[in-house]
Image 1 (cartoon, one colour):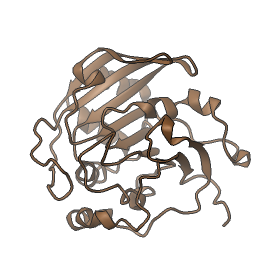
Image 2 (tube, helix red, strand yellow):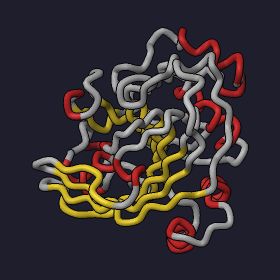
Image 3 (cartoon, helix red, strand yellow):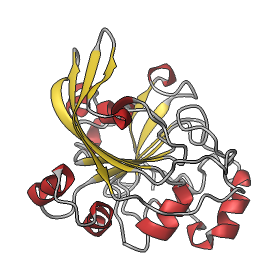
Image 4 (tube, one colour):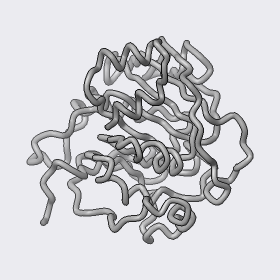
Length: 268
């Protein structure tokens, strides 16, 4: 389960991440954001505080799944921005301030970067795994703590070679500007994610309009390398929890919260 994945990424270290794992108990709820780049908007928009402030589009659903305990970001390009440089101020504007109070380097992760899937296959410096505890102060959401685990790995390799074999479960999956802009440097646009949502136990799929609607024409290399990522799934009649104007997140169309599992199927 998810705990097995996290235990493996922590290794034998006895630092802040280990202490958090010991304290949270059980299997933490994980939001996976592939191709996250330096973006931290998921920390805001998937918080319990935001859920309380943004009403559901369909009130008859009666609620929504619980928020994540941990935000897992993956990206093969080794960004050195924000908390990835160390503790201290991560972001500040006239509405939001984010400070990294704790930053811990975990054992390095090893997985391949296939040139068929990326624009910069010779980019050096991948493999870092960084845990951070962030203090968020927002004029709209108040103050809260969020925990982010950043793994520098190519998304499909991380999922197929590490997460799926360890039966990882992701309560939330975020597809925002996949492979370009906020993440950058990818040839796929992430349509393949639709095939694995139920396999990883995804309850909420958050996506902007950049996801392909042609059946994943750019994903042929993904499936040739990792046939286990193929599947019959596509956008179903999933209830929409809410929609956020694209300008507030990705500028690639509106961002929609889809309730994948655990909700009634609308129109069925």
